Length: 329
Image 1 (tube, rainbow, N blue to C red):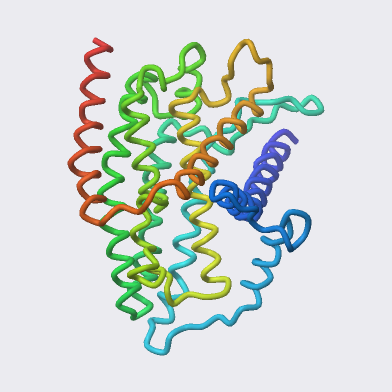
Image 2: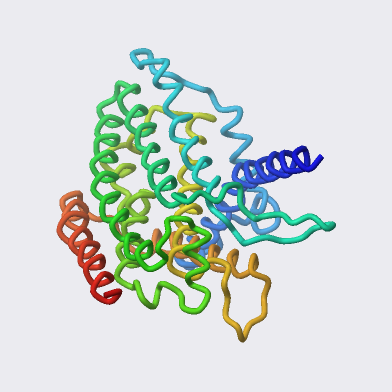
C-alpha cells in the first residue's frame, strides 16, 4: 500500500510540474508586455480583456490555427525534430529543482521536489546544454542562410558562456561540500551565498543572460540582420515551442540563482513567511530582472559578446574559484 502511495505521489507531482510549466509562459508573455509598456511609458496590451489579460490566449489561438509551413528544400525530419529537442531539456531540468523541503497534507509528508540527486547541479548543467542542439538543427534543417547564421551564432555563444557559468558555481559547491541542491540550500540557512560568492553570482547572472539569449546577448535572434535568427522559417505551434522554451529557461535560471546564491526557501527571520512563499518571491524578482534588462540595455556587437565571455567572465570565474579556496583554507 505504501509503495502505491509513493508512486501515486510521484506521478501526481510530475503531472502538476508539467501542467505548471506548460501554462507558465501564458502569464509571462502578458507580464513581459506590461513591464515593457510601463518602462517605455505606455500601457501595454489593453484592448483584449481587462488590461489585455486575454491577449496571451488570443496569441495561443493564433499560433494554434496558423499555417504550419515547411520550406520546400528543408530537411522535413530534422525541421520537425528541432523544436521538440529545444523544448524537452527545460522540462527535464525541473526534475531536480526543489521549491521547498517538505510539507504535511492529511498526515502525509510531501517533498516539494521530484528527485534529490546527489549530483543534481551537475545533472541540471548537463541537461541544459542539450538545448543548443535543437537550435542548431533548426537552423540547419531550414536550408536558409539567415537561419544557419543564427544557429551558428547560438552555438558559439552558448559554448562561450556555458564554461564560465559552470566555473562560477564551483565556489558554491566548495562551500556546501555537495552538488545536491537541497544540501546547497541548507548550507545557506545562516548566511546566503550572495554574501560569500558575489563574484560567482555576477558571472552566473551575466552568463545566464547569454544562455537564455536575452538582451543584451540577443545575437542569435537579431531581427535586424537575421530576420529572427534560427527560427526564421518556423510558424504556428512549432514556433511556439521555441518561445515556450525561452521562457522556461528564464524561469529555470532564476530558480537556480535563488537556490545557489540567495538561500533558496530560507527567508529573513524578521519577516515570518512560509518557505515556499519566500522561494516564489525571490523567483519572481529574478524573472522581473530578466524582463527589465531586456527593455533597458541595447544589444552588444558580436565581437563584444565573445570578448565578454572569454576575456572577462572566464578569468573572473577562475579567480572566484581561487579566492574561495584561499578563504576555505
